[in-house]
Length: 192
Image 1: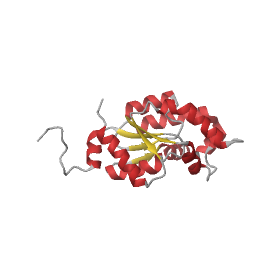
Image 2 (image 1 turned 180 degrees about the vertical axis):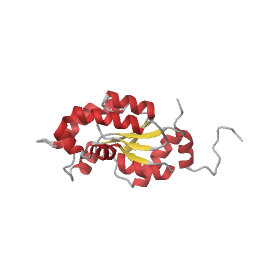
Image 3 (image 1 turned 90 degrees about the horizontal axis):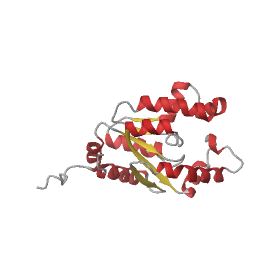
Image 4 (image 1 turned 30 degrees about the vertical axis):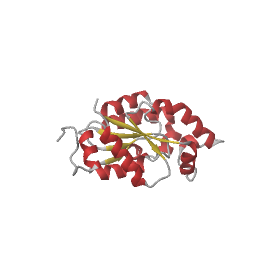
């Protein structure tokens, strides 16, 4: 038997977990890409804890992300986000979903790259818009033309998201199918 060949009994999740080792799996991407939903299901499949960094920020600050933005502004929010991410990524393995701007912030990006394997859920504008326009909880979309704002964010952020270790296209398919694609991408990733 070839040493490189996986045993037939190894499931995709087991292979992905072996590839991940003690590293964290960190989901990045724009709001509405599915980082939290797919991240949570991926964590379940891997049998590791799941943490949503925005929820952790809200827990430690006792404020919503929207309230933090309104009260302190984006710069202060990003500083808090970087501190929370640094703490969350100190140990693993776990699955972490980040806010859409986390990977854009240079300090947070350093913590994320150091603390885990990054996976970008890349989605097209229409998919994102369909998902985010139903709620008004997105502080960056509280503009005169939120769809144009979302498109502008895509143009600005996608080149930076492209630095991720892995990319999976987020689209309107069953969440379980997305999780399988994520697990396959992780399982097939060569450790650097």
